[in-house]
Image (tube, rainbow, N blue to C red; front, side, top):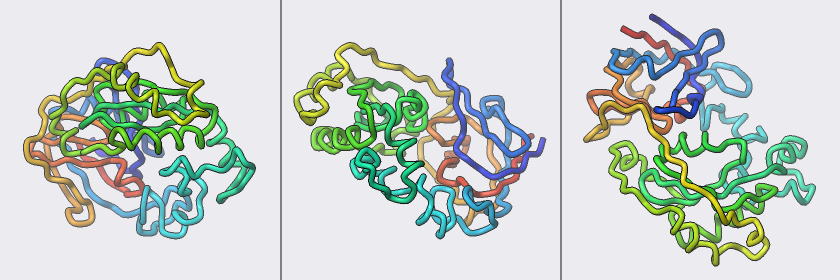
Length: 264
C-alpha cells in the first residue's frame, strides 16, 4: 500500500489504547493498524501549511514568511502570558486572537517524563496530554481566557517543571505520581486572581499508548539528512512513531513535509 501527502500532527481518539490517524488530503491511515508492519518513509518535498507552496519549512509547518506573519503562530501561542485579546489589543489578527484566547483554558499537571505544568484550551483536553506522551494528567484550574492560564503557568513553573524530556518519555522511564497531592500542594502558589478557579474535585486521567516495544537507544529520524527510511513500526507515543531499530520519528516536528509512505 502506498500513500502520499503532507504531514500534519496525528489526530487522536481516546481509547484502550489510544487510536492514531494520519490525515492526508484524499486519504487517511489508522496508524495503529500498521504496528508490526514494515514502513518506508520517503521525503518528497515541502508544502507550507499556510500558503501551500513548495517552500522550505522554517518552523511548525510554516515557511519563513508565514511563520512571522500568521496569527496562529504568534508569540502568545508558546507564551500564553503574552495574550492581550482580553484587553482588545491586537498582535497579528485580533479577530482570530479573540476567537482562540477568549475561551476556557485549562492549566494542568501531566506526567510524561516527569511532573510538569502546562496550558491548553479546554477543547483540547485530553488531546494535548496525548500529544505530550503523558500517561497520567490532572486539571488544576479552568479559567475564562488564555492570559489567566498563562500567568498561572508562569507562577507554578517556579515550583514544578514546564518541559518534557522526550527521550525519557519515549523510553517509558516514568514513575507513577500522585497528581492529586501535587495539585493540592500548588494551590497556595496560584495568582490571587486565579484562586477562585481552582478545581477542588478532580480525578487523574490515565492514558495508554499503543506500544509493543520501547526503544533503548534513541535515533531521531531527520528527513533532510535521511530522505528514505524503512523500519518495522513498534509503537506510537506522543506524536512519535517508534521503530524496531530504535529509530523514532516526530510527526509533528515534520509538519509541512510531503512524504510517500509504503506499507508492506
